[in-house]
Length: 218
Image (cartoon, rainbow, N blue to C red; front, side):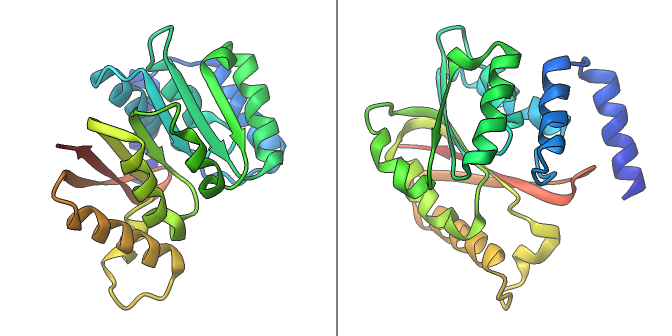
């Protein structure tokens, strides 16, 4: 673990410039007592790169927290791009909104407050989304996948975080609702012939976990 963290620190210090707005977002999250579960700087840069590599103009994020990942995604969009981010907890959303204003990206971000499964049916007018980032309650992942497929197009990319769960995802006997949710998410991916998916396992300051990367085909 110490080696993973040292490498993460080295990567961030060497390849990712210090960013006062992003650092302030994490500080505001800590000060508000939000759980320390935001993506790492290296993972945030990865999300930004995904948006840039596919030329995303419309992004959907399910799970805002304090908006740290939202800021990374927003920075991967063109000036006229837009990200819709959904947050169930009003207190979290208040911290995120202030972070967006501080970073000068509030006009690019549409923050909506409420349970994602209540909000997703109202997004048809914003679709199709080029990129969907799923990082919310894991038991609902299968439902989030169904909505992501309704709100995307051929060529869109869906990224889901925290899918390895320190290896627990491979335990078919697990009764952990988060593990069960991720496994059902994988089953949904495998059952749809339109989807091409892989999982990238990650280690670092966030421990052992991973991302599921999916491309929507015809």
